[in-house]
Image (cartoon, rainbow, N blue to C red):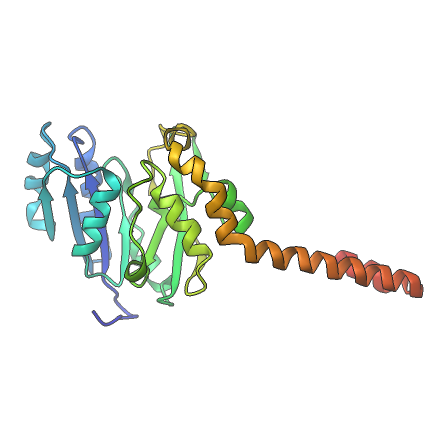
Amino acid sequence: MKFNQYKPLISVIQPVFNAAHCLERSIQSVVTQTYENIQYIIIDGGSTDGTLDIIRKYEDKIDFWISRPDEGVYDAMNKGVEIANGDWLYFLGADDVLVNILHRVVPCLRKINTVYYGDVYWPNQNRVYDGKFQWNKLMNKNICHQAIFYPREVFIYYRYDLAYFTCADYALNLRLWGDRRFKFEYIPLLICIFQDRAGKSRLEMDKKFQKDKEYIVQLVFSNEMHRRNLRLFVQEVLVSVLNKLGIKDIVKRTLMQ
């Protein structure tokens, strides 16, 4: 689909499984958005608890939905990617609430090689997560998945790695940050109310990701680290030379930069 910079199509992809206790509120947050050019996709993993009754209740407002067993949330999201036609893809958990914000996000989505992200609210911890990221910040914690708008181009090259049980989105973000074809840009908007009950246990649950993370980080950020170390080395040499020349004012200004 040709990118429409004035009214891009946003594909909202929602993986669901046995979420009857919370899904209706989440669905309502999507179908009542002020921005109308939305493709709403629900991928259900074969729920047995009344979830399908809720989906059918809103069937006329959902562009596509399916219910069949899958291999978990990331498998469902990969299936949603295959169906999505949007210029931008956004993933929403079954118990999360999308703020009525898409009409304010869309004007920010200017570059189709850029991953845009904002903030989410964590009600359990009563705080907003987590501002602008730099590469060293991303090494230590992830950008919340429900804060991110991925350009369609991302999924020409990538899918969620099903080997990672709870952190495939983190692995994807790390790889994208190191991929020179893409950039990340922060937009200071609250995107979603994200249910944060899992907390740090999410990382602890994904033992394979914990095992692989150091390798992924080294692979992705080795160039960043090299440039940073080179810059520090050049600064140290410059300061040393200026000191020897007795040009103290220049040294002072250099250190303050």
